[in-house]
Length: 99
Length: 180
Image (cartoon, rainbow over all chains, first blue to last red; front, side, top):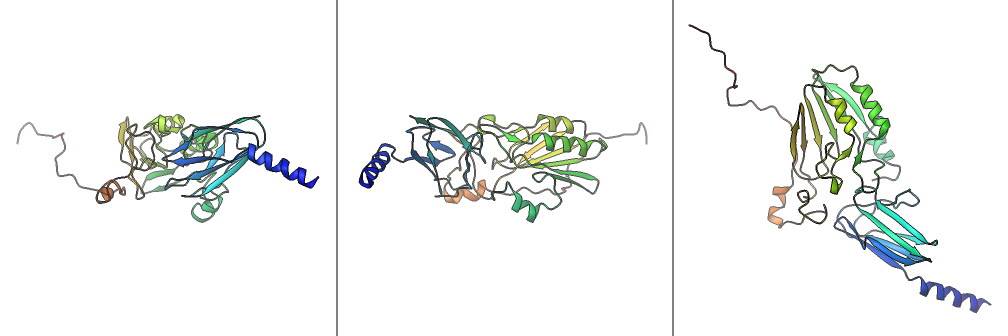
């Protein structure tokens, strides 16, 4: 029973690999990221200036990310999530979560 | 940057300010107005003043004589320098409220370079930064920090100051008597 659960968990982890969005030169790279449900997305700020990740409707918001800081969010439901930088709002990005 | 939308900052530097930190005061007959256009920004958008601040501004200016010089400052340019990079403010009402005054000086930062413009009685100025230079509008894929050779760096950083300078040229209007 316990062994079976462990297998299930590790399968889920293998299926939903973690994904990354890099912040460089005031842009999100990639601007649109497609991931399966359950993926944890990590943003890393590579700029020499702070950025703040904010979901358009404020469903999540990172703190101020200084150079090298990261912010992670796990997406448990399918759909398209739009976000932007709360300090530099022309910086926009999308996470497409597939079932 | 603090997480309470500027609460800690305002407690230290913004005592007596309204809303997210706007304020005004008079000095030597000049009316100074500090606006906040960097709070509650929307995706893809420009700087934003918000209805509460605009209503305050209208009330603040209501009883001011049009001959009173006005100096306005805000972080993001109050006029649109380059919308694609968000270099402007969603606040045309603010400029409309200032239009009736005889002398309006608008000082902004944000774009880390000097851009000036005169429109009617309004003069707009942006300033350099002491942190890093940014590219001229549209000359790079994004407005991110511009890397320049180390020996050039100090020529693209700078501060803005205001001082009285006596001109060395006579005024264009001269009055001459008919005789004598």
